[in-house]
Structures are given as C-alpha cells and as structure tokens.
Length: 132
Length: 280
Image 1: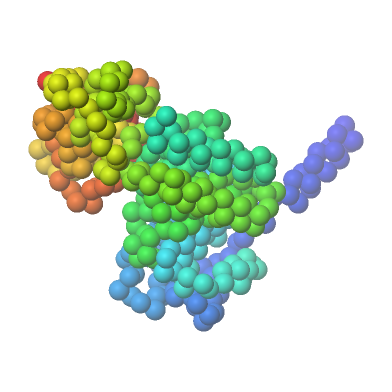
Image 2: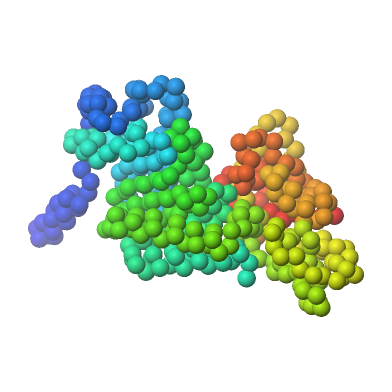
C-alpha cells in the first residue's frame, strides 16, 4: 500500500515537471511589462484584455478597431485549431502581414496582443512576458 | 489529364516529399483563396479541413490592417500549426512538438514556391478558372483536328485563349454547337456563407456573378436560374440562384445559402458544398 502511494506520488511529481508552468500574473504586472515592451524596437503597441477591463496602447490609433478585431480573431482561431489537431495548451499565435505582425497569447485570464513592425524581433518581448 | 490534375498531382507530390523528408509533419494541405483544397493528406478528415479553413478565413478577412496575411504560426504544447501564403495558394502544416521548425520552414518556403513557379511556367492558365479538384473531373472534350471525330461535343467557348486554332470541318462545327449544352458542367466547390438582410427568399442561393457568367458561357449564354447543391454527406437540393449582392463576398468562392436550407442540408457556414448549374 505504502509502495503504491509512493509510486503515485512519483508519477504526480513527474507529471508536474512535464506540465507547463501555470502563470499567475496579475493584470497590473502584465500592464507594467507591456509598457516596457512598448519601448522595444519595432513594437507598435499592444492590447491587454480580460473579462473586466481592456488596455489599449497603439502608436496609430486610427487602426485600433481593425487591430482589435484581428487579434480577437487570431486568438479564437488559435483555440479552434489547437482543439482540432489535439495540440494541447495554446502558447501563442503570430500573424505576419505584408506591413506588420501581431503576436497574441493568453496569460491566465488575460488576452494579450502585441503589434510589431514587419521585421521586429518577437523573442525578446515573448521572453519578457513569460518571465513571471 | 486536365491542367487542374497536373497542378494537384505536382503539389501533392511536393507535399508527400516534404512529409518523407520531415516525418514530424503530421498534416499538410494546400488550399486556394477560394477555399478549394488543391492537395492534402488522406489522414486529415474533410470536416477538419473545412473547420481549419474557416478558422483561417476569419483571420484573412480581418488582416487588411497588417497588409494581408503572409504567414500564421500557432504554437501549442503538443505541436505547431503553420500557414504560409504563396499568392493565391496557402499551405497549412501541422507538426509535432519535437519538429525542427527552422528546417521545415526553410524547406516549405523553397519547395512549394518553386513547384508553383514551375507549374506557372509550364501551364500559365489562370488557376481560378479551373474547377474544383474534388469533383470528378468531367472529361472535357479536346478539339479535334481535321478528320478526327472522336470528341464531337467540343464547345467553342471552352477553348483556351491563345490556343492554336484547330481545323474543324464546318458541318461538324454546326453539329457541335447544337450539342454543346448537353455536356455536364463540373461542380464548383464553394464555401457556405449565411445570407444577410430582411425578407431573404428561402429557396434562393447566391453565387459570385463571375461563376454564373462562366457557366452561362458554357451553355452558350443561356441563363442559369437553378443550381444543384450537394453536401459532402451526399445530400442534394435544387434551388434558384442569383448573383451575390454583398461586395465583400465577391471572388471569395462562397455560396450564400438561407438558414432554412442550411438546416435541411445539415450544413453550416464555413463548410464546403458542390454547386452545379441546371439548365432547363
């Protein structure tokens, strides 16, 4: 009995190690980090949205609605595609256009989209967001 | 072999070779802007592909702000979905978590455009005029040279622009013209879209005017007033057809079907159906 319990504990530990780390970032933390990311080279702006609030910061506010709709579509498509192909937890989706690109991801209940110039580096902002 | 077959076979071979070179590619298929699936793997069910196209379609429709879609990369714990746009062709690749994405991306971005460019050089006919791959291609009659009588159903309008003028005996040409509408026009594969607005007639579907004009030219200008809709489950219905009014659907390869008819056919927005003109 003890042996079985131990074995179960070992399995649970092994599973915990292979599971993605749950990010429990608060919205305020994210806002601070996104503000910093906004200053990176090639970053046009961002949208941070959750069930109760939304923060939008774009260099060109005329495209605000179009960007918001596109990022929402990208996140919806990401959920649908990961489910269709049984790909497990969704990490992020990058939509590259001829002029610019959008990186969308979810952290906890927060839906985040960062807008970049076409040739901007996305790795640094991604790292910044995932260092919680 | 039609040009459509040539394209489909060449692209299918390219996909197969890619999958041989990278066993981590789980699914791969190529579709056109119109929603037509040009090549793909047998393991991906049709319904899944249709839902994938629907998901990407939402992104495509809203990507004007970024200058249109060039690529989409979705990263998940269990793998990656990547879409690469090559003009009017789009390639979707699903890879496992361990896949070498750099290698696959390099291979993809070199191989598929090369094959497409090659095909374009060999057979520069605009692809959008070629009927859907999945409908069994009706053997289109080849204009015969003088003295040959094997394919009497040739229609003048079917000849490719710029093709060499075959010498056909005059009496036979007249005979041909009277028989022309009797050949079966291949079904066109279209994506189901809802019909918006008030007082929508429940017995009428709407199709791109370009498609209707093409059909009418095949029927020597006869107006196409009815079409047959066939679902992938084999359900069919005959209904009236009119051109699409909403400009946002022009050239998108959609058929607007009233909600009631969608319920009857057990289909929904985003699914593919075959549409065939009926001349009465």
